[in-house]
Length: 178
Image (tube, rainbow, N blue to C red; front, side, top):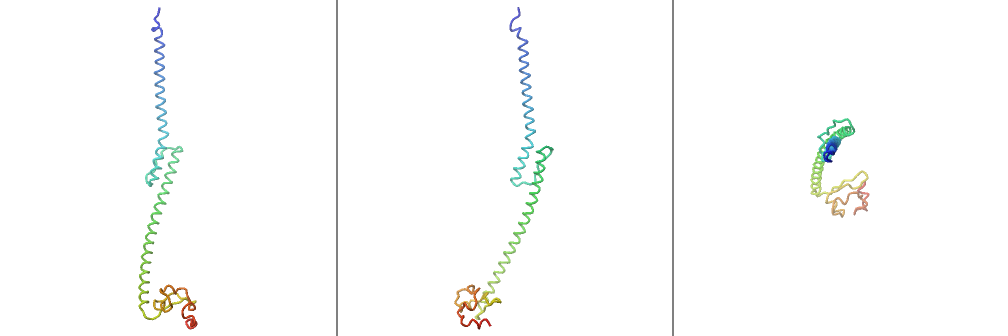
């Protein structure tokens, strides 16, 4: 008579072998799946990192586009786009610098013009003679302070755009238009 434990020993050994082999197969399958997942997601992570650097303004580090699949093509297109953006950014910086230089020059010219106008205005207002100038339609373009006072204006700028018929001497306007 064979003991039951002795009779079932080969079956138990076979069962443990199946469990061990199945566990090893499962471990190998999970390891292979993780390896494949990393191989698939690595280019996407690298692309994501490059996009993040691009968003921060770093256009100089190109994305490695070593594969020929969709992700590789996307990386190459992204690199081309980054190069175009870098070119355009450099052009805009150059144009901005040029515009700032022109703007500074314009401000200097405007300041010089203002100073010149103030000097001429000071000279005209210091002269005791009444001075005015008109356009070809005999409309006042300006005058000195003495003429503005005689015309009843506080500021010589108030006479601009008026003609002799709008002045205190309107009765004699024809004499000023001859």
